Length: 121
Image (cartoon, rainbow, N blue to C red):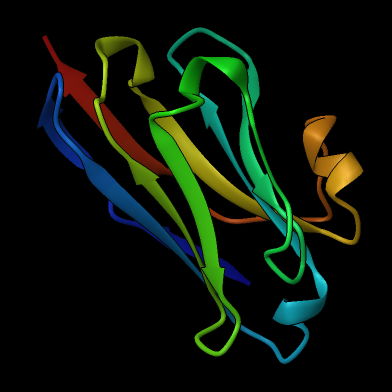
């Protein structure tokens, strides 16, 4: 089970850190990802991290502004979001899969509930 938190309302240029807590003993064996769905749009891949944190991937619009990380001891994955823009407004979801390839293809075995991020201009 995945539980996302940390969303909220922030002004453009501000920062937020999302957290996704996972239950279960096999968290460290999964690649983890963040996705977002803006109103009226499809869900998009945002970022992903391999099971050991050794490799990370980002969609181009967030490169240089967002950072994904994980703490396997705490069964938690994070998304640090800086320099937020109004177009970052969306419901953000965390997800897990055996392979990071699946996550990058917008697919996952397990999905958490979303957390809403609203960026005002």
